[in-house]
Image 1: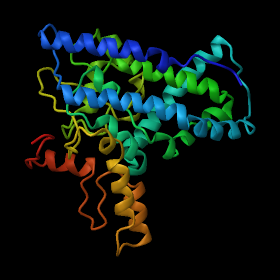
Image 2: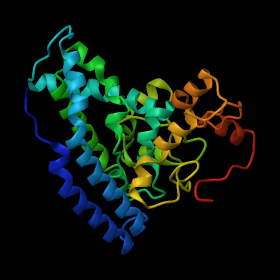
Image 3: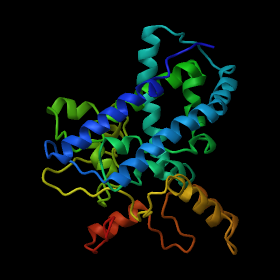
Image 4: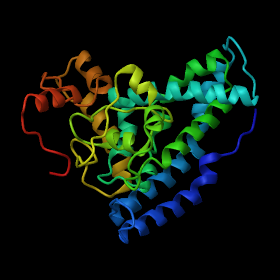
Length: 303
């Protein structure tokens, strides 16, 4: 079993230092941004819980990929070129995993945690789920294993991908030169991803590279001067980390087992996009966008 550095665990102290520095700079109005201390502490608590979850339950996800490893068609090995190629391939798969997290409610039940803050700063990057190992999302990495990347290598480059994404959770940086904004995921692009504006919902899924969104039609540009609001279409209204972690998963289970539904409707409540309604009165991102473009007044998160 190859050993790789535990990148996120090693970086954790730096994360908290950088959050503190940005928090101070925002308070002194040296940089743009907003902090609310209860929100920030909740986010940091979620980050610590995510690390604990990975330590306690990460072996389950790794075991699933190691079982698939026996069916690989090739072995790229553990060389530096293999690592770089794996990083590129993992970023491509991450795009589709991230898209699935937004378009399949069961996966959303974990990922919603990351979008639950109504603020956008470095602490928001730490707001990570505690139940991701129980959703089966790891199986979407199966193609990487089957084509020949060792599961340990995949886990390592996935950590590098998340490490990259830490710094883009900020309002302190406006925009980079156009070529950087065209190729890479940046604070500007990721602010759009966290925005609750109807034009921004389910946009900019990229991890390191934003070109995947440009290729697959999910890209949206941040407009200069536009007011950005963050959070969920319907905010959860709590700073309780346990409720933040599990509220949506509990809601999914409750909705699936509600009386009077057909099997198709129960499956829809679990695996259709968030906002699916068995009655047909959906409130998915596409309906929200259609109503917005039709000129209907829509409440923003926090109103």
